[in-house]
Image 1 (cartoon, one colour):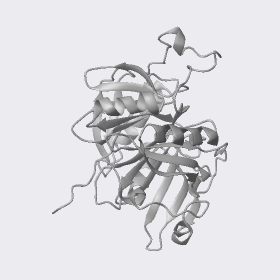
Image 2: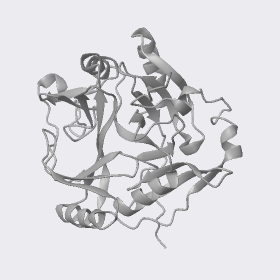
Image 3: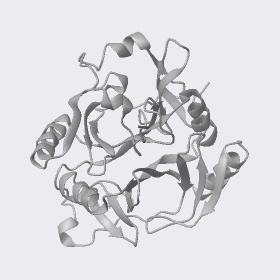
Length: 320
C-alpha cells in the first residue's frame, strides 16, 4: 500500500525566523549567506535563495526573541487548501484558523503542533520577479543571478520536541506527510523522524529536545548545487567571523554533506548537499537507525559536537 496518504501539500514554502539582532541578521543572510532581499515591511525582511521561485523562502522578523515564527507549506491547489484545512480542523490538534497573508502570499490556514510550533498552509503566492537587470539570470529557466555563499533553494528545517512519536502523528495527520528515516532508541522512544510530502528525501525533521526547551527551532537549511559550494562557504564564514559549529562533513542519516553555523542572533543555519537522492517509491518503508548506529557518529565516524544536541532557539533560561 502507498505510504503517502495525500498529495494536498506541494512543498515546504518558507520559514519565519525571529531575531533580536535584526540588522546584523539581515546583513549575514544577504551579504554573507547569499540570500536575496525581495522586499520588506515594518517588521520583516523577505528573503529567498537564487533559484527559489517564490518571493520569499525566509521571512526574517524583528523580535525580542529568537527561534521560529512559523513554518509554511504551499498546497497543490485551491481545492487542496480547503480540503486540508477541514482535515486539520477535525484532527484534534490546535487550530488557529484563517489569517491574512503578507507581502509574499495570500490568505493562509494556521494550526499548531503539540509542542508550540506554528504551521500554515496556503495556495495564493507571489512569484519572484527580478527587480533590476543585475538580478536577471543569463538563463531564462533560472530565477536569478547569485552571489556570496549562494545557496540554491530552501531545503528543510529541523524542529525539536519532547515526543517525536506524537510529532509524527501530527505530521501524518495534518499534512499527509510520510516518513523516510527514523532513529529508534533503546528505550522505545523515537530520537528523530524525517518527513517528506513529495519526492524529496525530506523537507522537515523532528529530533528529541535535550535542552529543556519547548517549541524550539534546531536549524533551517538551504541546499547547494555541490559539495564544493559548502567548502567555499566555510572560507566565506571564516573570513566574516561567523561561528562555525560543525562540519563540513557528512550525516549518516539521509547521507547529507553539511556545514552548520550560527547567525548573529544565535539561530542555527545549515548549508547542505543531499546529492541526487529522491524517494520515488510510493510504498517506501522508513530506514531505521538504532541507538547503536547513532553512537558511531556521523557517516565518517566523527563525533557530533555537544552543542548540536543541546543548542536551539530560543535559548533556555538557566536557573541560578
